[in-house]
Amino acid sequence: MRLSRRSEYGLRALIDLVRHEADGPVPLATLAERNRLPPKFLEQIMATLKHGGVVRTTLGSHGGYTLAPGASGTSLSHVIRLLDGALAPVSCVSLLFYEACSCPDEATCSLREAMIEVRDRMLSLLDSETLAETAARPGTALLDPHGRHPEAARSR
Image (cartoon, rainbow, N blue to C red; front, side, top):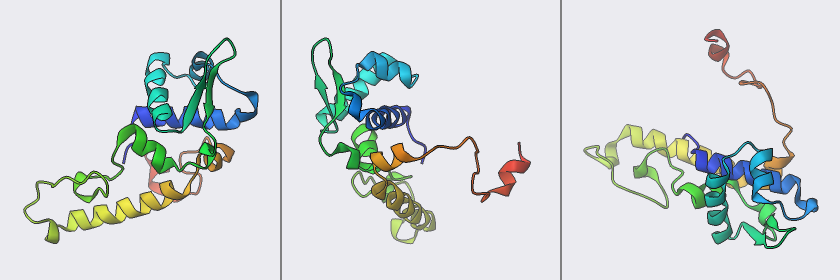
């Protein structure tokens, strides 16, 4: 799975709102500037998140975006589905957006079986990780912080 820019930007904006929740409403321009996001695109993303009940807006000179009540407990999978739809690596294993694939027989397709396992592992993480938990992470500059992929270090 590759996270779309729409979901990446939406998650970054939401994490910013979690981290600055006590500051009150955040104007779109501030949210865009702090996170180096294109304002027009962010505006579209925030409209989708508002429609999905994750954020709300306040009008006026001190207006802007805030998290909807309880939204800091929203899962990453919920946000990604709001912004992009399917999370599955291929459409024939999508739980909510299933589409038949081009293989001759789904019942005997070993690639499909592997992709079901990928989907389940990915969903396990994305369903359990909340915006608040992600916002609380310190971040890392390392590409392989746990040393699980030594081949990546050799290719750099």
